[in-house]
Image 1: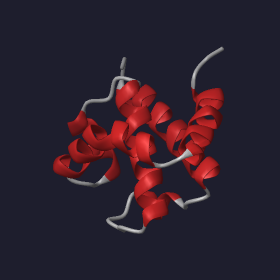
Image 2 (image 1 turned 90 degrees about the horizontal axis):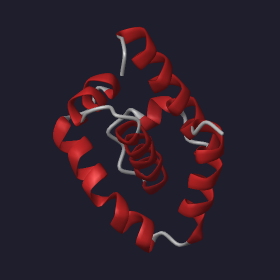
Image 3 (image 1 turned 180 degrees about the vertical axis):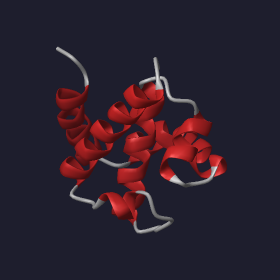
Image 4 (image 1 turned 90 degrees about the vertical axis):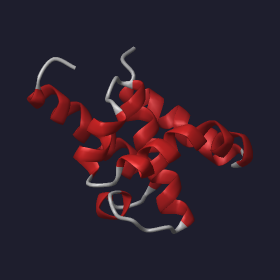
Length: 102
């Protein structure tokens, strides 16, 4: 990730996309809420940031959440996908279409 401003642009774009697709407000995504829809949105945010090259520490710093929280969500993401049914796959396709360049 080239510089801080580019990192911030990428972070904001992914956060806005996750917020729009999941219909969970960004303040909740960046909170410590354990509501299932919030946890799902947060795990999507972490997944996409990590996939874009953000380190776990950078994700933690930018969201205001602990590194342990970030690490746990990233590690558990595959299991979350496996057991969530189709809704997570549908949301991921929608996010992919808005985040990944064509």
